[in-house]
View 1 (cartoon, helix red, strand yellow):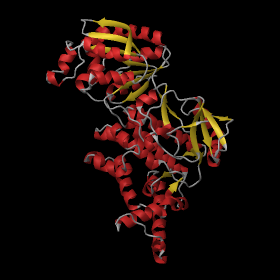
View 2: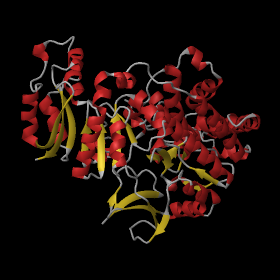
View 3: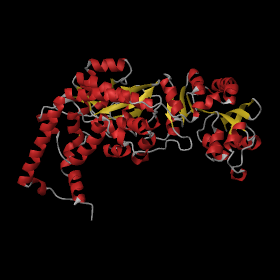
Length: 74
Length: 451
Protein backbone atom coordinates (compact mmCIF):
# COMPACT_ATOMS: atom_id res chain seq x y z
CA UNK A 1 0.00 0.00 0.00
CA UNK A 2 2.73 2.41 0.98
CA UNK A 3 4.46 1.86 -2.33
CA UNK A 4 1.28 2.61 -4.27
CA UNK A 5 0.69 5.84 -2.37
CA UNK A 6 4.24 7.03 -2.80
CA UNK A 7 4.30 6.29 -6.51
CA UNK A 8 0.95 7.90 -7.09
CA UNK A 9 2.08 11.05 -5.42
CA UNK A 10 5.34 11.01 -7.37
CA UNK A 11 3.85 10.41 -10.82
CA UNK A 12 0.34 11.72 -10.44
CA UNK A 13 -0.86 14.70 -8.51
CA UNK A 14 2.40 15.83 -6.98
CA UNK A 15 3.87 17.14 -10.23
CA UNK A 16 1.41 20.00 -9.86
CA UNK A 17 3.37 21.10 -6.83
CA UNK A 18 6.61 21.51 -8.73
CA UNK A 19 6.62 25.16 -9.70
CA UNK A 20 9.38 25.74 -12.16
CA UNK A 21 12.18 23.35 -11.29
CA UNK A 22 11.86 23.36 -7.52
CA UNK A 23 9.57 21.18 -5.41
CA UNK A 24 8.29 23.61 -2.83
CA UNK A 25 6.61 21.02 -0.54
CA UNK A 26 2.88 21.37 0.14
CA UNK A 27 3.11 21.37 3.93
CA UNK A 28 5.89 23.97 3.83
CA UNK A 29 3.74 26.22 1.64
CA UNK A 30 0.80 26.16 4.06
CA UNK A 31 3.20 26.58 6.98
CA UNK A 32 4.63 29.81 5.62
CA UNK A 33 1.17 31.36 5.77
CA UNK A 34 1.13 30.51 9.50
CA UNK A 35 4.62 31.97 9.80
CA UNK A 36 3.30 35.20 8.31
CA UNK A 37 1.56 36.00 11.60
CA UNK A 38 -2.04 36.40 12.74
CA UNK A 39 -3.43 37.28 9.30
CA UNK A 40 -1.58 34.33 7.85
CA UNK A 41 -3.08 31.86 10.28
CA UNK A 42 -6.53 32.68 8.91
CA UNK A 43 -5.24 32.26 5.35
CA UNK A 44 -3.67 28.92 6.28
CA UNK A 45 -6.90 27.75 7.90
CA UNK A 46 -8.97 28.72 4.84
CA UNK A 47 -6.52 27.01 2.48
CA UNK A 48 -6.43 23.91 4.66
CA UNK A 49 -10.24 23.75 4.80
CA UNK A 50 -10.49 24.27 1.01
CA UNK A 51 -7.98 21.47 0.55
CA UNK A 52 -9.99 19.13 2.79
CA UNK A 53 -13.22 19.94 0.98
CA UNK A 54 -11.54 19.43 -2.38
CA UNK A 55 -10.25 16.08 -1.20
CA UNK A 56 -13.74 15.04 -0.09
CA UNK A 57 -15.22 16.07 -3.45
CA UNK A 58 -12.55 14.05 -5.27
CA UNK A 59 -13.29 11.08 -3.08
CA UNK A 60 -17.04 11.37 -3.82
CA UNK A 61 -16.47 11.43 -7.59
CA UNK A 62 -13.86 8.68 -7.43
CA UNK A 63 -11.18 10.91 -8.96
CA UNK A 64 -8.51 9.33 -6.81
CA UNK A 65 -9.14 5.83 -8.09
CA UNK A 66 -9.05 6.86 -11.73
CA UNK A 67 -5.33 7.49 -11.60
CA UNK A 68 -3.17 4.54 -12.55
CA UNK A 69 -1.63 3.05 -9.47
CA UNK A 70 1.97 2.43 -10.44
CA UNK A 71 4.31 0.85 -7.99
CA UNK A 72 7.89 -0.22 -7.98
CA UNK A 73 7.35 -2.34 -4.91
CA UNK A 74 6.60 -5.98 -5.39
CA UNK B 1 32.21 26.95 -29.19
CA UNK B 2 31.18 27.57 -25.60
CA UNK B 3 31.70 25.34 -22.61
CA UNK B 4 28.73 24.67 -20.34
CA UNK B 5 29.17 25.38 -16.62
CA UNK B 6 28.82 21.87 -15.15
CA UNK B 7 26.99 23.29 -12.12
CA UNK B 8 24.37 25.31 -14.02
CA UNK B 9 21.68 23.14 -15.59
CA UNK B 10 18.76 22.77 -13.19
CA UNK B 11 16.85 25.89 -14.20
CA UNK B 12 15.63 25.53 -17.80
CA UNK B 13 15.03 29.30 -17.98
CA UNK B 14 18.69 30.27 -17.55
CA UNK B 15 22.10 28.62 -17.57
CA UNK B 16 25.71 29.71 -17.63
CA UNK B 17 28.32 28.97 -20.29
CA UNK B 18 31.95 30.03 -20.72
CA UNK B 19 33.38 31.21 -24.01
CA UNK B 20 36.94 32.42 -24.43
CA UNK B 21 37.14 33.79 -20.91
CA UNK B 22 33.64 35.30 -21.00
CA UNK B 23 30.90 34.24 -18.55
CA UNK B 24 27.54 34.22 -20.31
CA UNK B 25 24.06 33.45 -19.05
CA UNK B 26 21.77 32.12 -21.77
CA UNK B 27 18.06 32.82 -21.31
CA UNK B 28 14.92 31.23 -22.72
CA UNK B 29 11.69 33.24 -23.01
CA UNK B 30 10.80 32.84 -19.36
CA UNK B 31 14.34 33.76 -18.34
CA UNK B 32 14.21 36.85 -20.54
CA UNK B 33 10.96 37.95 -18.91
CA UNK B 34 12.56 37.56 -15.50
CA UNK B 35 15.59 39.59 -16.62
CA UNK B 36 13.40 42.39 -17.99
CA UNK B 37 11.47 42.50 -14.72
CA UNK B 38 14.67 42.53 -12.65
CA UNK B 39 16.75 44.96 -14.69
CA UNK B 40 14.05 47.64 -14.72
CA UNK B 41 13.91 47.93 -10.91
CA UNK B 42 15.72 50.33 -8.59
CA UNK B 43 16.51 47.24 -6.53
CA UNK B 44 18.73 45.83 -9.32
CA UNK B 45 20.72 49.06 -9.62
CA UNK B 46 21.07 49.28 -5.84
CA UNK B 47 22.05 45.63 -5.24
CA UNK B 48 24.57 45.48 -8.11
CA UNK B 49 25.88 48.92 -7.12
CA UNK B 50 26.76 47.88 -3.59
CA UNK B 51 28.08 44.48 -4.70
CA UNK B 52 25.42 42.23 -3.16
CA UNK B 53 24.26 41.08 -6.60
CA UNK B 54 26.63 40.15 -9.42
CA UNK B 55 26.74 42.58 -12.34
CA UNK B 56 24.98 41.61 -15.57
CA UNK B 57 24.72 43.25 -18.99
CA UNK B 58 22.94 42.20 -22.15
CA UNK B 59 25.46 40.62 -24.51
CA UNK B 60 25.51 39.89 -28.22
CA UNK B 61 25.81 36.12 -28.34
CA UNK B 62 24.16 33.54 -30.55
CA UNK B 63 23.40 30.17 -29.04
CA UNK B 64 20.79 27.57 -29.93
CA UNK B 65 17.70 27.35 -27.67
CA UNK B 66 18.26 30.78 -26.15
CA UNK B 67 16.58 34.08 -26.95
CA UNK B 68 18.99 36.37 -25.11
CA UNK B 69 22.32 36.35 -23.30
CA UNK B 70 23.76 38.26 -20.36
CA UNK B 71 27.43 38.69 -19.55
CA UNK B 72 28.72 38.52 -15.97
CA UNK B 73 32.11 39.35 -14.50
CA UNK B 74 34.16 36.22 -13.85
CA UNK B 75 34.13 34.93 -10.27
CA UNK B 76 37.77 34.58 -9.24
CA UNK B 77 37.30 31.43 -7.16
CA UNK B 78 34.23 29.28 -6.54
CA UNK B 79 33.71 27.69 -3.13
CA UNK B 80 30.83 25.59 -1.87
CA UNK B 81 28.70 25.79 1.30
CA UNK B 82 30.32 22.66 2.72
CA UNK B 83 33.63 24.54 2.57
CA UNK B 84 32.29 27.60 4.41
CA UNK B 85 32.49 28.41 8.08
CA UNK B 86 29.48 29.10 10.29
CA UNK B 87 29.69 32.89 9.88
CA UNK B 88 30.02 32.58 6.10
CA UNK B 89 26.84 30.52 5.80
CA UNK B 90 25.09 32.87 8.22
CA UNK B 91 26.03 35.95 6.16
CA UNK B 92 24.95 34.13 3.00
CA UNK B 93 21.57 33.36 4.62
CA UNK B 94 21.10 36.99 5.64
CA UNK B 95 22.00 38.12 2.11
CA UNK B 96 19.42 35.72 0.65
CA UNK B 97 16.69 37.00 3.00
CA UNK B 98 17.62 40.66 2.55
CA UNK B 99 17.53 40.43 -1.24
CA UNK B 100 14.18 38.62 -1.15
CA UNK B 101 12.65 41.30 1.09
CA UNK B 102 13.89 44.10 -1.18
CA UNK B 103 12.83 42.26 -4.33
CA UNK B 104 9.29 41.69 -2.99
CA UNK B 105 8.96 45.39 -2.28
CA UNK B 106 9.40 45.99 -6.01
CA UNK B 107 7.15 43.20 -7.26
CA UNK B 108 9.82 40.53 -7.76
CA UNK B 109 10.51 37.22 -6.08
CA UNK B 110 13.43 34.79 -5.90
CA UNK B 111 12.26 31.40 -7.11
CA UNK B 112 14.77 29.34 -5.16
CA UNK B 113 16.88 29.65 -2.01
CA UNK B 114 20.13 27.76 -2.26
CA UNK B 115 23.57 28.86 -1.02
CA UNK B 116 24.95 27.61 -4.34
CA UNK B 117 23.62 30.89 -5.75
CA UNK B 118 26.02 32.79 -3.50
CA UNK B 119 29.77 33.14 -3.80
CA UNK B 120 32.34 34.97 -1.69
CA UNK B 121 34.22 37.68 -3.58
CA UNK B 122 36.78 39.80 -1.70
CA UNK B 123 35.51 38.29 1.55
CA UNK B 124 31.87 39.29 0.99
CA UNK B 125 28.89 37.16 -0.07
CA UNK B 126 27.57 38.01 -3.53
CA UNK B 127 24.37 36.62 -5.08
CA UNK B 128 25.38 35.34 -8.50
CA UNK B 129 22.20 33.94 -10.04
CA UNK B 130 20.26 36.80 -11.62
CA UNK B 131 18.18 34.09 -13.30
CA UNK B 132 16.57 33.34 -9.93
CA UNK B 133 14.57 36.59 -9.98
CA UNK B 134 11.17 36.71 -11.58
CA UNK B 135 7.97 38.73 -11.43
CA UNK B 136 5.97 38.00 -8.29
CA UNK B 137 2.50 36.66 -9.17
CA UNK B 138 -0.06 37.91 -6.62
CA UNK B 139 -1.18 35.17 -4.22
CA UNK B 140 1.88 32.96 -4.80
CA UNK B 141 3.65 31.64 -1.71
CA UNK B 142 7.45 31.72 -1.33
CA UNK B 143 8.49 28.69 -3.34
CA UNK B 144 11.98 28.69 -1.84
CA UNK B 145 10.95 28.56 1.83
CA UNK B 146 11.52 24.83 2.31
CA UNK B 147 14.81 24.99 0.43
CA UNK B 148 15.88 27.94 2.59
CA UNK B 149 15.25 25.96 5.76
CA UNK B 150 17.07 22.87 4.50
CA UNK B 151 20.11 24.58 3.01
CA UNK B 152 20.57 27.63 5.26
CA UNK B 153 18.53 27.58 8.46
CA UNK B 154 18.84 23.94 9.50
CA UNK B 155 22.61 23.73 8.85
CA UNK B 156 23.09 26.84 11.01
CA UNK B 157 20.81 25.36 13.68
CA UNK B 158 22.78 22.11 13.56
CA UNK B 159 25.89 24.00 14.67
CA UNK B 160 24.31 26.59 16.96
CA UNK B 161 21.71 24.40 18.65
CA UNK B 162 23.05 20.84 18.40
CA UNK B 163 26.82 21.41 18.30
CA UNK B 164 27.12 19.45 15.05
CA UNK B 165 29.22 20.86 12.17
CA UNK B 166 27.00 21.28 9.11
CA UNK B 167 29.74 20.88 6.51
CA UNK B 168 29.94 17.05 6.49
CA UNK B 169 26.14 16.90 6.18
CA UNK B 170 26.04 19.36 3.26
CA UNK B 171 28.97 17.63 1.60
CA UNK B 172 27.12 14.31 1.88
CA UNK B 173 23.74 15.73 0.87
CA UNK B 174 23.69 19.19 -0.75
CA UNK B 175 19.91 19.37 -0.26
CA UNK B 176 20.52 19.65 3.49
CA UNK B 177 18.69 18.01 6.39
CA UNK B 178 14.93 17.57 6.13
CA UNK B 179 12.64 18.97 8.83
CA UNK B 180 12.04 15.49 10.24
CA UNK B 181 15.79 14.79 10.34
CA UNK B 182 16.31 18.07 12.20
CA UNK B 183 13.57 17.12 14.65
CA UNK B 184 15.44 13.92 15.40
CA UNK B 185 18.75 15.72 15.84
CA UNK B 186 17.66 18.50 18.19
CA UNK B 187 17.58 17.84 21.90
CA UNK B 188 14.34 18.18 23.85
CA UNK B 189 15.00 21.72 25.11
CA UNK B 190 16.03 22.92 21.70
CA UNK B 191 12.90 21.39 20.16
CA UNK B 192 10.78 23.39 22.61
CA UNK B 193 12.06 26.75 21.37
CA UNK B 194 9.26 28.50 19.45
CA UNK B 195 11.41 28.83 16.29
CA UNK B 196 12.27 25.10 16.36
CA UNK B 197 8.62 24.21 16.96
CA UNK B 198 7.53 26.20 13.90
CA UNK B 199 10.29 25.73 11.32
CA UNK B 200 11.32 22.22 12.36
CA UNK B 201 8.60 20.25 14.17
CA UNK B 202 5.53 21.81 12.58
CA UNK B 203 7.09 21.76 9.12
CA UNK B 204 8.02 18.09 9.56
CA UNK B 205 4.48 17.25 10.64
CA UNK B 206 2.83 19.22 7.85
CA UNK B 207 5.15 17.76 5.23
CA UNK B 208 4.20 14.28 6.39
CA UNK B 209 0.48 14.99 6.38
CA UNK B 210 0.29 16.94 3.14
CA UNK B 211 2.52 14.84 0.94
CA UNK B 212 1.22 14.97 -2.63
CA UNK B 213 -1.45 17.61 -1.98
CA UNK B 214 -1.84 20.69 -4.16
CA UNK B 215 -2.32 23.88 -2.14
CA UNK B 216 -1.22 26.63 -4.50
CA UNK B 217 -4.73 27.57 -5.69
CA UNK B 218 -6.18 27.16 -2.20
CA UNK B 219 -3.63 29.58 -0.75
CA UNK B 220 -4.24 32.17 -3.44
CA UNK B 221 -8.02 31.90 -3.02
CA UNK B 222 -7.64 32.15 0.76
CA UNK B 223 -5.94 35.55 0.35
CA UNK B 224 -2.22 34.73 0.52
CA UNK B 225 -0.13 37.83 -0.21
CA UNK B 226 3.47 39.06 -0.40
CA UNK B 227 2.96 40.68 3.02
CA UNK B 228 2.86 37.21 4.59
CA UNK B 229 6.13 36.27 2.88
CA UNK B 230 7.69 39.51 4.10
CA UNK B 231 6.53 38.89 7.68
CA UNK B 232 8.07 35.40 7.56
CA UNK B 233 11.29 36.77 6.05
CA UNK B 234 11.57 39.44 8.77
CA UNK B 235 11.22 36.78 11.48
CA UNK B 236 13.77 34.57 9.74
CA UNK B 237 16.21 37.51 9.58
CA UNK B 238 15.89 37.90 13.34
CA UNK B 239 16.20 34.15 13.94
CA UNK B 240 19.27 33.71 11.71
CA UNK B 241 20.84 36.88 13.11
CA UNK B 242 20.51 35.49 16.64
CA UNK B 243 22.08 32.09 15.84
CA UNK B 244 25.61 32.10 17.23
CA UNK B 245 28.54 29.72 17.31
CA UNK B 246 31.46 30.74 19.46
CA UNK B 247 33.97 28.33 17.94
CA UNK B 248 35.65 25.28 19.36
CA UNK B 249 37.94 25.62 22.36
CA UNK B 250 40.35 23.01 21.07
CA UNK B 251 42.30 22.96 17.84
CA UNK B 252 44.59 25.35 16.04
CA UNK B 253 43.54 28.64 17.58
CA UNK B 254 46.35 28.03 20.11
CA UNK B 255 48.87 27.44 17.34
CA UNK B 256 50.12 31.03 17.34
CA UNK B 257 51.48 30.56 20.85
CA UNK B 258 53.86 27.77 19.73
CA UNK B 259 57.50 28.85 20.14
CA UNK B 260 58.59 28.18 16.53
CA UNK B 261 55.70 30.16 15.02
CA UNK B 262 56.77 33.57 16.26
CA UNK B 263 60.48 32.76 15.89
CA UNK B 264 60.27 31.75 12.20
CA UNK B 265 57.38 33.90 11.04
CA UNK B 266 59.36 36.83 9.62
CA UNK B 267 61.97 34.63 7.94
CA UNK B 268 59.25 32.49 6.31
CA UNK B 269 57.40 35.62 5.21
CA UNK B 270 60.49 37.13 3.53
CA UNK B 271 61.30 33.76 1.93
CA UNK B 272 57.74 33.59 0.55
CA UNK B 273 57.98 37.13 -0.81
CA UNK B 274 61.12 36.14 -2.74
CA UNK B 275 59.35 33.05 -4.12
CA UNK B 276 56.33 35.14 -5.17
CA UNK B 277 58.68 37.56 -6.91
CA UNK B 278 60.46 34.71 -8.71
CA UNK B 279 57.39 32.80 -9.89
CA UNK B 280 54.85 35.66 -10.26
CA UNK B 281 51.81 33.39 -9.79
CA UNK B 282 48.25 34.44 -10.69
CA UNK B 283 46.64 32.06 -8.18
CA UNK B 284 48.12 30.77 -4.94
CA UNK B 285 46.69 28.11 -2.65
CA UNK B 286 47.88 28.13 0.96
CA UNK B 287 47.52 24.64 2.45
CA UNK B 288 47.15 24.70 6.23
CA UNK B 289 46.70 28.47 6.19
CA UNK B 290 45.74 28.80 9.88
CA UNK B 291 45.30 32.53 10.59
CA UNK B 292 46.02 33.38 6.94
CA UNK B 293 49.28 35.25 7.67
CA UNK B 294 51.14 33.81 4.67
CA UNK B 295 48.03 33.80 2.45
CA UNK B 296 47.82 37.53 3.11
CA UNK B 297 51.45 38.03 2.05
CA UNK B 298 50.60 36.24 -1.20
CA UNK B 299 47.47 38.38 -1.69
CA UNK B 300 49.47 41.55 -1.09
CA UNK B 301 51.68 40.61 -4.06
CA UNK B 302 48.59 40.99 -6.26
CA UNK B 303 47.73 37.30 -6.69
CA UNK B 304 44.44 35.58 -5.93
CA UNK B 305 45.16 33.81 -2.64
CA UNK B 306 43.11 30.93 -1.25
CA UNK B 307 43.42 30.05 2.44
CA UNK B 308 42.72 26.35 3.03
CA UNK B 309 42.52 24.84 6.49
CA UNK B 310 40.65 22.10 8.31
CA UNK B 311 39.98 24.09 11.47
CA UNK B 312 36.68 25.97 11.44
CA UNK B 313 37.50 28.08 14.49
CA UNK B 314 40.58 29.74 12.96
CA UNK B 315 38.98 30.20 9.55
CA UNK B 316 35.78 31.63 11.03
CA UNK B 317 37.90 34.06 13.01
CA UNK B 318 39.80 34.95 9.80
CA UNK B 319 36.52 35.55 7.94
CA UNK B 320 35.04 37.66 10.75
CA UNK B 321 38.18 39.81 10.82
CA UNK B 322 37.01 41.21 7.46
CA UNK B 323 39.67 39.41 5.45
CA UNK B 324 39.42 39.70 1.67
CA UNK B 325 41.02 36.29 1.21
CA UNK B 326 39.22 33.34 -0.37
CA UNK B 327 38.55 30.86 2.44
CA UNK B 328 38.09 27.10 2.17
CA UNK B 329 37.36 24.83 5.10
CA UNK B 330 38.42 21.32 4.23
CA UNK B 331 40.43 18.51 5.77
CA UNK B 332 43.57 18.18 3.66
CA UNK B 333 43.62 14.43 4.25
CA UNK B 334 40.15 14.32 2.68
CA UNK B 335 39.83 17.43 0.46
CA UNK B 336 36.57 18.26 -1.36
CA UNK B 337 36.24 15.77 -4.22
CA UNK B 338 34.55 16.20 -7.59
CA UNK B 339 30.89 15.39 -6.94
CA UNK B 340 27.27 16.06 -7.81
CA UNK B 341 25.50 14.99 -10.98
CA UNK B 342 27.66 12.70 -13.10
CA UNK B 343 30.47 13.30 -10.63
CA UNK B 344 31.33 16.63 -12.26
CA UNK B 345 28.75 19.18 -11.15
CA UNK B 346 31.02 20.49 -8.41
CA UNK B 347 34.72 20.02 -9.25
CA UNK B 348 37.17 18.99 -6.55
CA UNK B 349 39.10 21.62 -4.60
CA UNK B 350 42.46 21.40 -6.38
CA UNK B 351 40.87 21.38 -9.85
CA UNK B 352 38.81 24.45 -8.90
CA UNK B 353 41.69 26.28 -7.28
CA UNK B 354 43.92 25.56 -10.29
CA UNK B 355 46.93 27.08 -8.50
CA UNK B 356 50.05 28.59 -10.09
CA UNK B 357 51.86 28.24 -6.78
CA UNK B 358 51.37 26.28 -3.55
CA UNK B 359 52.29 27.34 -0.02
CA UNK B 360 52.72 24.36 2.30
CA UNK B 361 54.24 25.85 5.44
CA UNK B 362 53.85 23.86 8.64
CA UNK B 363 51.57 21.24 7.15
CA UNK B 364 53.58 18.40 5.54
CA UNK B 365 54.66 16.91 8.87
CA UNK B 366 51.05 16.81 10.07
CA UNK B 367 50.06 14.84 6.96
CA UNK B 368 53.01 12.49 7.48
CA UNK B 369 52.90 11.98 11.24
CA UNK B 370 49.27 12.62 12.19
CA UNK B 371 47.51 11.22 9.12
CA UNK B 372 50.17 8.59 8.31
CA UNK B 373 50.50 9.63 4.67
CA UNK B 374 53.88 8.53 3.27
CA UNK B 375 56.22 11.47 2.41
CA UNK B 376 56.54 10.15 -1.17
CA UNK B 377 52.75 10.28 -1.57
CA UNK B 378 52.60 13.83 -0.20
CA UNK B 379 55.30 14.98 -2.64
CA UNK B 380 53.56 13.22 -5.56
CA UNK B 381 50.32 15.00 -4.61
CA UNK B 382 52.06 18.38 -4.63
CA UNK B 383 53.85 17.57 -7.89
CA UNK B 384 50.45 16.72 -9.41
CA UNK B 385 49.52 20.40 -9.13
CA UNK B 386 52.30 21.12 -11.68
CA UNK B 387 53.39 24.44 -10.21
CA UNK B 388 56.05 25.85 -7.87
CA UNK B 389 55.76 24.91 -4.21
CA UNK B 390 57.06 26.68 -1.12
CA UNK B 391 57.13 24.12 1.66
CA UNK B 392 58.45 23.57 5.15
CA UNK B 393 60.12 20.36 6.18
CA UNK B 394 60.34 19.40 9.85
CA UNK B 395 62.92 16.80 10.82
CA UNK B 396 62.27 13.98 13.36
CA UNK B 397 64.42 15.77 15.97
CA UNK B 398 62.05 18.78 16.18
CA UNK B 399 60.10 19.13 19.44
CA UNK B 400 56.79 19.16 17.51
CA UNK B 401 57.59 15.77 15.95
CA UNK B 402 58.46 14.41 19.40
CA UNK B 403 54.95 15.39 20.51
CA UNK B 404 53.26 14.02 17.38
CA UNK B 405 55.03 10.66 17.71
CA UNK B 406 54.78 10.33 21.49
CA UNK B 407 52.30 7.45 21.16
CA UNK B 408 53.61 5.98 17.93
CA UNK B 409 55.95 3.05 17.39
CA UNK B 410 59.01 3.82 15.25
CA UNK B 411 58.42 0.82 12.95
CA UNK B 412 54.92 2.09 12.09
CA UNK B 413 56.26 5.34 10.65
CA UNK B 414 56.91 5.73 6.93
CA UNK B 415 60.35 6.16 5.37
CA UNK B 416 61.40 9.52 3.98
CA UNK B 417 61.24 11.41 7.26
CA UNK B 418 64.88 12.48 7.56
CA UNK B 419 66.12 15.56 5.73
CA UNK B 420 68.36 13.64 3.34
CA UNK B 421 65.63 11.07 2.52
CA UNK B 422 63.05 13.83 2.03
CA UNK B 423 65.36 15.83 -0.25
CA UNK B 424 65.90 12.71 -2.37
CA UNK B 425 62.11 12.35 -2.74
CA UNK B 426 61.74 16.05 -3.58
CA UNK B 427 64.57 15.81 -6.13
CA UNK B 428 62.61 13.31 -8.23
CA UNK B 429 59.87 15.87 -8.98
CA UNK B 430 61.26 19.32 -8.15
CA UNK B 431 64.36 21.49 -8.56
CA UNK B 432 65.22 23.70 -5.60
CA UNK B 433 65.27 27.45 -6.30
CA UNK B 434 66.17 28.42 -2.74
CA UNK B 435 66.60 26.60 0.56
CA UNK B 436 66.87 28.06 4.06
CA UNK B 437 67.35 26.36 7.42
CA UNK B 438 65.36 27.81 10.30
CA UNK B 439 66.13 28.31 14.00
CA UNK B 440 67.75 25.33 15.63
CA UNK B 441 68.17 23.50 12.34
CA UNK B 442 65.25 21.10 12.61
CA UNK B 443 63.12 23.03 10.14
CA UNK B 444 63.98 23.76 6.50
CA UNK B 445 62.01 25.81 3.97
CA UNK B 446 62.22 25.18 0.24
CA UNK B 447 61.23 27.15 -2.81
CA UNK B 448 60.74 24.46 -5.47
CA UNK B 449 60.11 24.51 -9.19
CA UNK B 450 58.51 21.43 -10.79
CA UNK B 451 60.83 19.44 -13.06
